[in-house]
Length: 438
Image 1: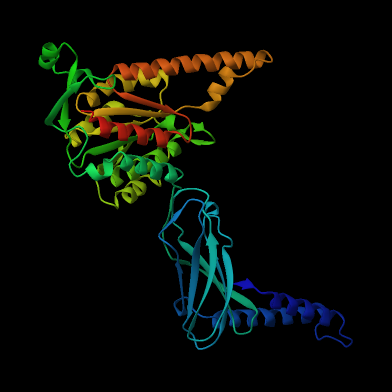
Image 2 (image 1 turned 180 degrees about the vertical axis):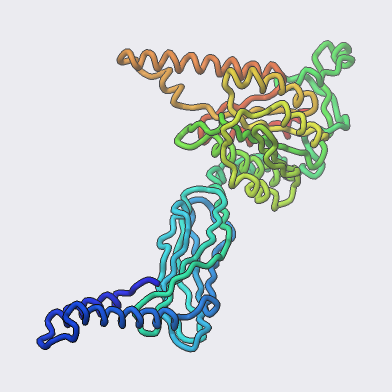
């Protein structure tokens, strides 16, 4: 029972009336006031009992199943009044603050045997899955003295998906690829197939293992074999969800850059007729999206990543790479989106990377922190700036050494600043498709 303003006004009016009553009050002022308060309390109880019971009001909420981070959607509450009289209703919802609801409460006047609705807008400020459950509803009694309040369970889920920041980048790469006739030639393929097509002279971008030594000996020039491409090549993204991906670059965690780059790469690859899959991992494999070329595949990738947040654990590259090779036996382009630091890379990534390189074309993609470059190249105006510049330069030297080691192990490398990773990753994929990397 929640008192209404009318109950308080009546109580105050009675107290003032008794205090200033000109005549004698039977039993004295305090006794009279106690009797009146008792009667008012009984009236409130009667009002409470007369308010509609739980089953006489049906409360529901409706909203889109998924919302993009930062966009606006409408959430609607609906209350059905199954009683024979009009009621006044106050409604409160337990929407999370990061959903950015314009309001979480409403008041409704509902005629008998009718339904009334109220709406609010939500503008989510954090991606992930939200599961509001409880709705609190208060109904006025016929005397208007109290609210009869109760809580009902109306569970639902709202999935907030990440913004596709690099959409224009992906679209530009698709146009570029089609300009190079990738789109029209996809049906017969241009990537790393297994059927021999022709011999041509070696170029700097060719892999050493494609050299045809017999033709090289006959011509006196390095000659490589070119293989006829296979249709529906596969691109698998291995997205690291370990603690290193929690570090902020450009104001957001590295994982956010990785998610955006994955969506961009998936969009380009599907548009060019290739199959795209995803493995997310930390100390274990978190989720797997089998490679497909369906137009719905990008949505499946997004569904697997929208509620992904960095686990504060060291990633187990060995186990994940081993299971990936066992799961995907057909030669594919594997894109490992991760972060390189000396201790973690030497202890786990470097020993595990050959497992992938032996069976697949591998590309390791990272996000470079532009602040390190700015500190290393910036003016040295005081002692603090000198120490900062020295530390940044040392960190960049170590990073470049780690990247060189990855290349030495047979994998390609992308180390891009925030905003550049999606474009460079799409370019690398298109080049892989053009060159027929096997």
